[in-house]
Length: 165
Ligand code: OFO
Image (cartoon, rainbow, N blue to C red; front, side, top):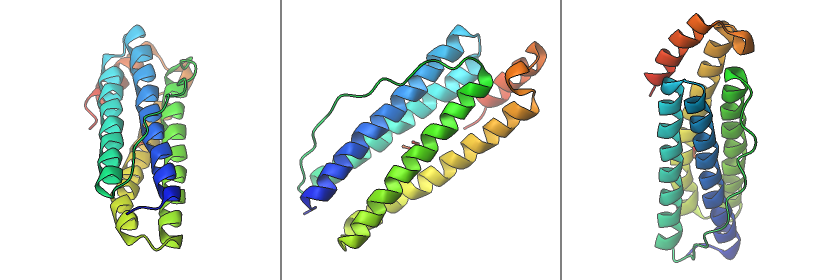
């Protein structure tokens, strides 16, 4: 059985994954309004992935005899002003989520709850991949001209991002 402290922290993480999904959704809507269909597809896919993370943590808490409380999701914040801000928001969100997960890993270690520690390793790996992807895409955006990108560069980049897994 998980401790009350870990239960509370994992519940907060469930809400944070939902919040991440909301951020990706907000960015997807921004991309749609800006004729960036490739970026939109990418954001929609990643929003869905965050929901999968959320569902997995819910299952885990329940499996360990814990109780899940579904909470309100915070406002994802204002839309970005340009494609550079869009991908900066992705990276920021991923870094914050990684930090939060590391805290839970540390807690599980302090409590010697090795089942939770082991469960979290999958999320740690997932975050490593997502941060790398976010960094790569941000680099691509910067190389293509950042906030002042030409329409032609934007067209190409949108296609590349749309084909990104
Ligand atoms: Fe849930 O993986 Fe990103 O934030």
